Length: 374
Image 1 (cartoon, helix red, strand yellow):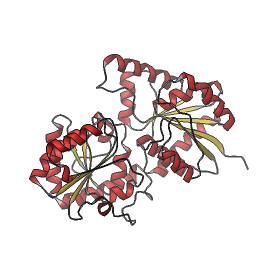
Image 2 (cartoon, rainbow, N blue to C red):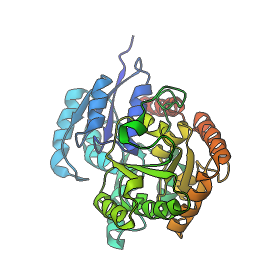
Image 3 (cartoon, rainbow, N blue to C red):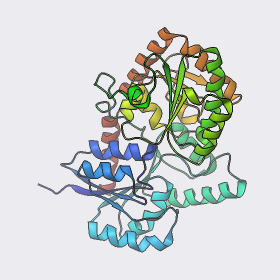
Image 4 (spheres, helix red, strand yellow):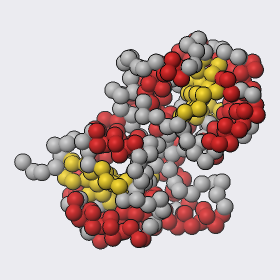
């Protein structure tokens, strides 16, 4: 019998985020009789420990820089030692630091664009440089995968020659199963069982809008004092968030946590999940919350709009006037248990039908097979 193909899954960091959750689901669902995954990350972190628990080889070559030419030969030497046959790069930094090595070894490269490195809120010169970097990477990869149609269209808008196929992110419905027993996170964190719990799990960065959510929650709580906000994550706006909570006087109703590995348990404790981003590729955190049957409030942006149908499986708010819109949504949904139940059932059904990890993995395996035949 033929040996399984050695596939390198490459990611920028060992911390847990959207792309990292995608990678974990992918390697967990790969057909091991056909594919033998190994993972290269450019920082250490809890994802590396999780992979090793899963008995998936995981290696770290430290760098936090994209296009870190000083690391390219090290990457090439390691890939040759590992006898890699196919490279799957997840995100810009990963591809920028693995592409040269892969091409010099004659290996096919897939590039999954989880989110573009250029954004509307960047200075024009930074955006131009990053677009040039993405043009370089996408033109030299054998296949580009967009995680949503809007993600694909953004690439075409800025790079007319960009070509990709769309494979949506998928969630492991066995791991994210609301019917399973879960830890009592409320008891652990001292959150009363009778509080309506609003949950945010994301990086504390401008594009995820944690400060807007804090302002909206503080305003909404004045109309419905029975709410509590749990925010899970880290990032460059965390310190500012702490100061804002203190200045608004809502510290007794807000709990802050760093990123956690027990995400299904945290989600199980919540009533409403909020994702107020300014843009998204196809947000895995949102899909995880929906898989756990949470009532959703999310901003109406690119990738999110491909998942949420307003009034059917969640509540969408416009980014213009975001704080006021979030406030109104929080007040209305917190007072409407029947609507929360309806959103919960529809959210779980959406993920089961359209965004499950097994289906995603089979699609990616098909692309592996096609590239290996060329």
